[in-house]
Amino acid sequence: MTSYDARTALDAIHHHQEQTRDAYVRHGSSLPYMLVTALSVFGFSAAADLQNPWRALTLLAAGGLMAGTLFVHQRRAPVRRKPSGAEWAFSLWLGGVVIVILVAAVIGARLLKLPEPGVIAGAVAAVATLVAGYATRPIVKAITRQDGHV
Amino acid sequence: MDPDFDEFLHAPARLSIVALLAPADWVEFGFVRDKVGTSDSALSKQVAALAEAGYVEARKTRNRTGRHTHVRLTAHGRWAFQRHAAALQRIVAAAREPQE
Image 1 (cartoon, each protein chain N blue to C red):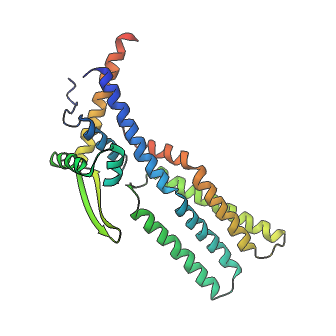
Image 2: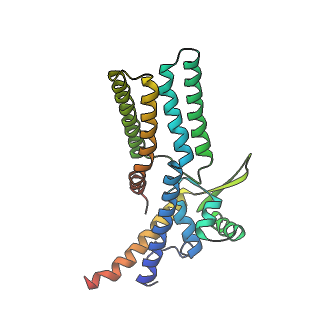
Image 3: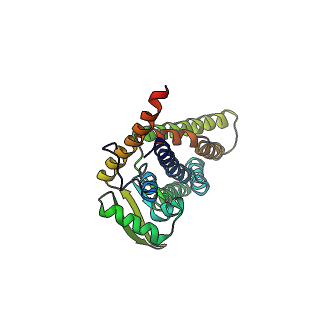
């Protein structure tokens, strides 16, 4: 075993580990799941402008869509791993940012006396969800890289 | 030779499989096959050899879209892989030392 052979083997190891991490991150923020998640966020927000029973039905539909998406997402993942504490913390922070944007959009729409502020804020939050999903890919990948592997 | 160097694990196909499994809990068989660039039967043989050595375990499930196989490193396999990678790093570092 020469140092060149060892270096080559290590490079191959790192390359394959990156492939696994790439697949994990790419699946986590793939377009169909991001679109359905954004639609759910929009549904939750838009429900605020509706009267019952449409409000309850919209909330149920958005909740069902979110739960179904999570289930299918997990079932179809080529790479499965338990999220680390850092990944959970980052996801919660990101969710918090989307909620802050949603609340700010509701307040803004009400201040501007726009019709259906929940729908407008929902659209803003849905776009924010899509942007956040793509923009944070490198951060999520960096977090998975820190997760104690070779 | 470094005592942590694992001759069995160092075979290129087996090292590729184990490296692909290392950052994950479970990995789909098809994903490993595509990334290693091998056939189903060749990968099955390597996975069987790794399972025989106690390095990996496979799980078969069936759902509406057909049968799926997932593979993961056992605790022993993960430990052996980490020791092997550390041995490789030491070999590289030892070769660098006299020059620095």
